[in-house]
Image (cartoon, rainbow, N blue to C red):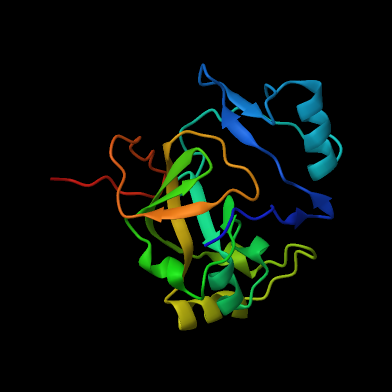
Length: 192
């Protein structure tokens, strides 16, 4: 596997943004605090006039886990525009459906370690064309028929670090000492 790929274009705008946590744990965008003028300009260029960042007021910011990792091989096998899957990280140079054997493993990407939990069950949002907004339910039917309804991987940051477009990605069998995943709103807690 080669590298982290450049983010896809959304609505005609290049949306490659480096989001991270500062040394004190505050979120940053391309090294700036979220309310910096440079961040506002970047966001409006990508999302349109009036767009702004707001802090989530609850822990329900995501459905399963905070990251979604997709590979070019799986996206090509599915014959989809990667934007239909909405990954946070797209990895290039991966053969076919290799990602399907990655559950429970880790990725070293740049300075970060990313934990890979499970394959992501796809939802109705995949049926919407990212350019036109038109719905094609056959997209989800095909994902269910050919891939058991799952494409890409639910993931979390096991060790914070910077990840850049072009960074080499290494698949790891294990990683000790990382952060436990923060679970989303549709994950049932495990009961002993």
